[in-house]
Length: 302
Picture: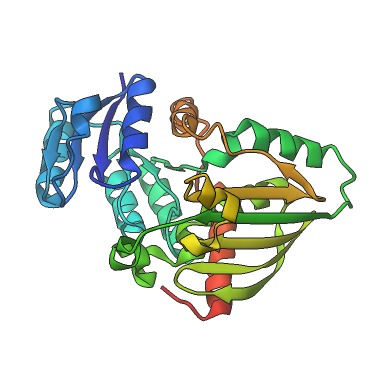
């Protein structure tokens, strides 16, 4: 049984990681968060040691390591701007890292992490769960089987409304979250690059705290994209149905349905990581370079 620790246990995404650890047969032995609203641990790992001070968490993991009972993986669910530091900590603690996206905020941070991977012999894994979605896999296979010179017209619109709390939290802070394209759009941009190939050009049409839009020219696609956390941007029928999220991906005018099937993608990601098939720095780099280019063009720097 693999032993896990988790950084950021009180965060929004932590329950998906807890569920994935449980469902892949792992054991969470320690968790840390400066906030103590972590009753969710009782649903998965009630015996996990919990710390609100990182220094005590560090000391505890070191104690386990010295007695020959070190953790195998540390799952990182902390705010985006802390990922870099927590990845470094994980590798130097002798564990493999499983880090939520975005892996880091700036592409050059990846180079330093690669060096630490080499020094420690440990790997950084990131969660790029849309690469494991059956509909997305099928679409990629369809594109790969088509004329390699074919350039598709693609439209991606993703709206996931957030309340007033969002802008008051770290997620609304450009320096800590990286802005809407980085925090909300990163996994969709990774998906597009994975399906349609490398970036050739990017154009930003709008960029604000609550929405952004633009165009991408990829190897096999011209993409019109729109991201929003503003409830007013939702289609009327979506609002009427009482929903707060809307996503649509169309290729050549045909909608690609991938609204369902999201609930177990973190578990699938963990299963692949445990088999040695996790997505690492090389896979994360293209989308990080893309969102960095979007920020630069928009004049929005973290």
